[in-house]
Length: 163
Image (tube, one colour):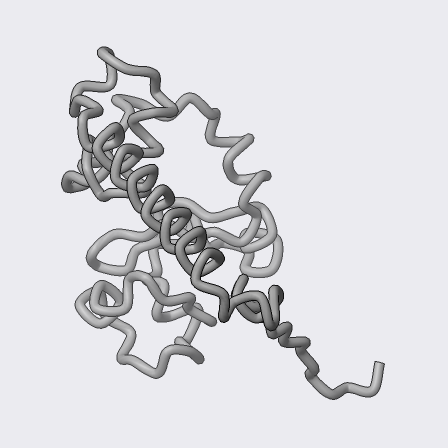
């Protein structure tokens, strides 16, 4: 409301078990119990790690959630391998629906000739599809500050362009 940007930071501190017990820690029997519990915890952790390492790489052999869990926790499995996208042979959405769903999109070729545009772009720039002008004749790039050619656009392909 004030126009200032604010954020909240939480610091969560967990007290060690020894600090909670206080004076009892000094007794030898309690320190032996703590050491035994720590060794038991280490053993449990090692058993779980061995179980996750034994999950096969092929997802058909174990449940899908077990493979995902192993991939996330230990970086092992099919999800830890290199990513290979799968592209459909055709889009399963009609052109009219796409242009209405993404009203400010522009598709252009290497020569910057507009091939497709959303309905709002067509409304504000009449003739963008019927005239055979290049995109650089209609717009200038505000951000990022690059020259308006295909090689510069490809260098910043993951950036948001403001025209």
